[in-house]
Structure formats: C-alpha cells, structure tokens
Amino acid sequence: MGRIESAPGAKDRLLGARSLIAETVEVHETTVTDGIARMRRVSEIGIAPDHPIDIAPGGMHMMLMGLKYPLKEGDLFPLILTFEKAGDVPVDVIVESPGAMGPHGMAGSTMPDTQHGANPVHKH
Image 1 (cartoon, rainbow, N blue to C red):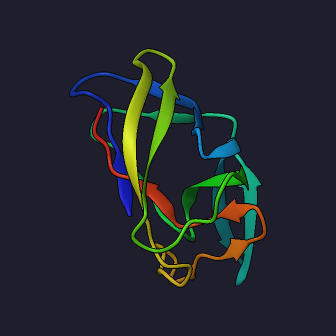
Image 2 (cartoon, rainbow, N blue to C red):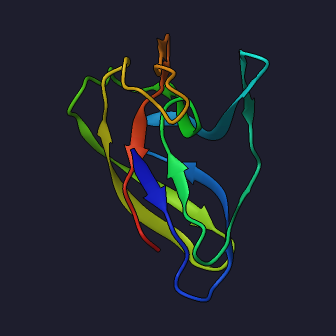
C-alpha cells in the first residue's frame, strides 16, 4: 500500500499518472455499496493537508494498461504522478501480489494488459 500526502499546510490535486512501462495509467477508485464493488476512473484527487490518500487494491489505485512487459510480484518500476501545484513527481512502485488485500478486504486482480496492485509510496 502507498500513501500520497500534501506538504504541511498545503493543498494540491493529483491530476494523473504515467509510466514508460505502460501505454496509459489511470487513477481508479473502488467503492462498495450494498456489498457490490464498483470501480470507476477518477479524473483528479484532492489532497488536503493532514488527509493523506491511501493507494491500495480495493480502494484508490493506479491501473496500468497496455503493459510493455509482464509485471510480477516484487518488481520495481518508475511512475510519474502529475499534480496541479507540485507538477511531476517521480515515485518508485513495488508490484504486490494480485491477491494483496486492500482497505475493504478485497483482493486486487490482474487482467490482460492491466496490472492492479502496483502501489506508489511517496510523500509530496
């Protein structure tokens, strides 16, 4: 699991992400309503002071699509997060197993050309 935090007393917005290992990277949020999990693309995430955003399977996560090579548990790769104020912030991502448990007790999943469970660990 990773965490994104703003600088003390500052607000910012995560506008997107990109990586050289995938054609596209989307920010997605998983919500559970009445026991049904739904995943949706999020165009931006507000980052408020003292309110970090957890990045994990089963919650807010990055979806890499069009991978240029397969990823496996333990792999490390660079990801660039783009913020409204902070600009581009490079982070290193460690790939977790597809069965890693997220904040809602849901396992992440791996689909063709997509890798869930890749989590950046970064403070900005």
